Every structure is written in structure tokens, then in C-alpha cells.
Image (cartoon, rainbow, N blue to C red):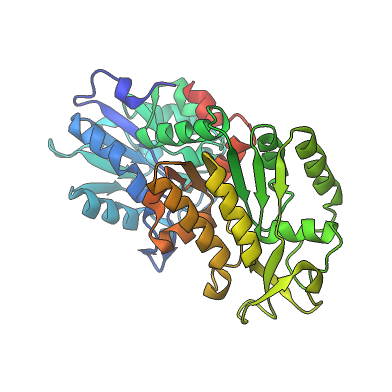
Length: 392
């Protein structure tokens, strides 16, 4: 996979830069700029090498229709402030644009084309639309790992018509995930949470063969507790999971990978209630399991202490309520402590995990934090991502 740093001459070259600027908006205001902050190094690298940048991105799911609330205007303004650079948003129909139309002034360096998903051809991976996008520039750069599991025109088909490279952020993401899944420093531990075990079964099965410990927490763990015969009360659970859980334990035994699940929990009568620590055989029918207990935190922290590599995807409990955030916070603190001592390689990913780390202000103390959701998980499943395959 060629990196943009491998291109010998970027001077005055027009570069189509595909980014994922799908940031959360509230009344037209950006509530989290993490995705914008992560792609700044690639833009700065291109500016330093005197390239002319045409940013391609999307926001939301307009399904081929122009929806004003999903304009890239607030993202354009945010980028202007962060780069201290004039950036023009081009709202003209992309299909009517020509390369010569893009840079009005001689010193104009960055333009943004309006939301790609305003065009139904984007999500249909339309060949004609992709060819037209490619005609606007000299070089294409994909720095949107989080979109690279999508077979969309600006991710996949476009690479057939233009010299294509990986951006700095995309390369970092691939390298970090390769260190976790291929270039392994054992012992390796995976902490995996979330509400549905069925959505992550393929990841667990793929990682069991490579990892020493798989720690299952969050809503997923409730299914295991129920399978083991414990009362889980009104806790979030998924139906028809016994076969999946049997498979996890069978494969883990065969591959000599430990599967760890909670030994004690924090419960509440509702999501906003007060926490109470409970042993597994003492949970009432009217209670919700909302976090891991102190005994489980101790076990997890000991495994982190003994690990050289760690992957974390999914919080340990309902961290939105501070009363049930202790498990997730303690896990984060332990990983940060080991990271500061340079004794661990740590990768975290998934929207809720990133939100927690941002809230704690510890994102920089992980070796890599991925903002990619679906692409991150599919890569861990061992799937070939269309956007990555296209660059290879």
C-alpha cells in the first residue's frame, strides 16, 4: 500500500483527499472534533509540500438528497480555525464541476466539496461518478479508514482512474491494528464490551486464536452469566445466544485462550439508581447489572499488568452514569499507568470507548485510539476491507 509520503513530487499537484469528517452535530454545532483533529497531520503534510487539496467527505445519511442540516459548512469553519487557513466550501453540483473551476485565486490551497452522500451515486459505487471525481485531480489520497469497509465511489471505484495513496492517519490505523493482530508481543489481552454478543462473535473467534486472554464485559457478559445459570434480573441481554457462547468456550479451550467474565457486579434498580455491589448468586429479579464489581476490576487489572499488548473495544458498564463508570475508569487508568512506563502497546476503539477516554482526557496515553467503528471491527474479524484492498 503506497503512502502519500512515497509520492516524490506534490508541488502544485491537485490532491483529492477522502476524509471521514462525519462528526456529531447538535443544531449545526460540532460536539466532538476528534475525527477532525486526527486528519490534520495529513493536511499539514500536503500544505507543506505545496499541494492543492480538494477535500471529499460526507456527514449523516441524506440518501442521495440535499439536506441543509447535513452540509459540511460547520466542518469547513472548524478546519479553517484549526489550520488558520481560508477554506472554500463548493456547494455547486459535483457532477457539473471541472478541475479548472476548483481553485479561484492563485493562492487558494484548500477547497471542500459538499456532502458526497447528497449524490446517490456515491453509495452505489457508481463507475461514472467515480471517474468524474478522479478527473478533478492528479492524485487521490484515502485518509478515511473508518469508511474503508464501504464499497462507495469515493473509496473503492475511484482508485481505478487515478494514482492512489494511503494518508498518514489511515497508515497509522493499519499499522496499529497489525501490531495487535499480526506482529504480536505476548501476552496479549482483549477487553471487549458492548450490548450484543452476536455482533462481535466473529471478532472473538478470530482473536481467540491469536490472544492469550479475552475479557468479556458490558451487556455482552450478561449473556454469559445467564448461560452459566446466574440470575441477571432486568439486565440487557440477547436471545438465542447459548450456541454462540458454547462456541466461544469450545474454541478458547482448544486454543488455550482464557475467557474471563465478571465475578461480581454493580447493580441498580434503574439506569439512574444508586450502585450496589453484588456477588453473582445474589442478584434479584428486579435489578439491572450496570457495571463490573471490585473483585472483577482487580482480576482485569492484574491481567493488564501481565500483558504486553492490549486491545480495548467497549466499556465495562453504563459509564454515562458516573455511579456505574468505575469499572471502565479503572481499566483505563491501569492501561494508562502501564503505557506511561512503556510496558504495554495499547489500542482502543469504538465510539463509546473513545467517548470515555475523551471524557477522562487520557486519549494521548494510548498508543492508538481508533475513531473507526465498523471498519475497526471488520478488520479485527479478519475481513478484507474494500478501501484497503483498492489501495493495494
